[in-house]
Every structure is written in C-alpha cells, then in structure tokens.
Length: 287
Image (tube, rainbow, N blue to C red; front, side, top):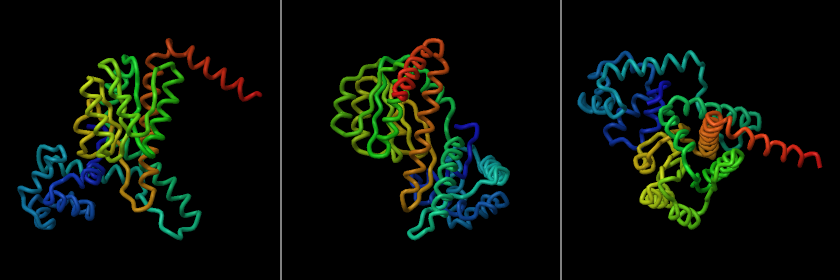
C-alpha cells in the first residue's frame, strides 16, 4: 500500500471489480464524499440502500480493519484534496474550443501522475528495480498505446547497455516469452490488465520462471493478480480518448522511475554507457 494512499482514488479505480452490493456503497461514497465522514455505519448503509454488514465488508475490501479506520482515511483524503487544491478530471467534449482542450489535457495528465503517486506501492518499485539490476535480459510486452510505452522502455534501458527488446504484436510476444528463463524479467504494460494476448504471454513467461512485472491500472485484474510485482497506475474513466492519454502518461512515468532507479544504483558502472551514447548522438546532430 502506498504511503500516499488515497482511499477515494482506490474506490474509483476498484469499483468495477466490486460485488454489486459493494458497488452500491462505492457509488454513494463517490457521489457524496463530503458527507461521508459525518455518517455512522448505519446511516451509510441506509443511504446506500445496503446493510451494516455490507458496508463493513466494503471497508475490508478496501483494506481497512473496520469502519472507523475507513472513515479516518476518507477524511484524510478529503483534506489532502483541499490542501492540494486538486482539479477534477474533465473529459474532452465534441465541439470544445481549442483553449478548453488544451487546459483539460494538461489538467488530466497532471492529475493522472498525481493519482498514480497516491496508489503506487513504493516497496514494489524497490523490488522491481532490484530484479531489473540482476536480470540478464528485459522484455517489454504491450499492445496499442501500451506498446508505445514499451518502446520507450526499450530505448531508455538500451542506453545503459541492458539487453532488452519491446514486442507489440501477439505473435512476436508469444515467441519472445517462450525463450525466457529464470534470469530474465518481463515487463507487461496493460491499462486494463485483461488483454487476452497479454495474459497468454504472462502464462508462458511464468512457466519459464521469468520474473513478471505488471504496469497496470489499480484494480483486481488478472494481470495484477498473477504478476510477481505490480506497479499500479491511476487514470480516469472518460468517454473520449483522454483516459488513454492519461494512462500512457502515467505508464511512461513508471518507466522513467524504473530506469532512473536502475541507472542511479549502478551509476559507476553505467556512466560510461551514458557518456558514449550521449557523445554519439551529440556528434550526429552536428552533421
């Protein structure tokens, strides 16, 4: 659990994976956040048309021992939101003026990074950096927009002389993971965590005992449940492509963290590679 844990973000991201009754509690909380700290468990159960037992189960699903600790966390989340003067996600609407689109895209991207910081488990990042330092080979697996994130990971880790490659189509992904060993690491990038091709590749990678890292939405997806290390992102559910943009920005930020973590820890070893690649590119730009 993140030290910056924000329960309101957790509820928003996990809502689709809850039971129907738990979702009723979640919907009421998200629609009436300001009044929640003032409600008793009975008042919340009545307002959400559920039961005391259902509210308690919901609290435990969110990771809290009881209703009181859950309410304290809600109050802290509300206070944090007010202190930071956060702006809510805003979807892009057909016919919006360009100035509105500019503002909304910047706001949504910033918010995706802030919310991801609230849900990311820093201990999982520590584990990921360590296995990336020790492994012989890194394989990035992702499709669509997630595949572009994989390409960014390949470009970055190549600069410090890590053997790595990004695979973006299903056939090449299956071929790549079938040749892995326990000395290799696979980074699966998928916002939904439920893409069939990604899950097929994950099963093969795990049979070959490769370490599997997932960069995926904060949710109870199959990818998150099966991966050895989970690096969660948080993005809005919006109707046009703003959501995909936000998830891409959040995923790229996680890649940056992993790369910087490995490069910093091994700086004495990799600085010669950074210098070499920098000099080559600088020289090329002069011609």
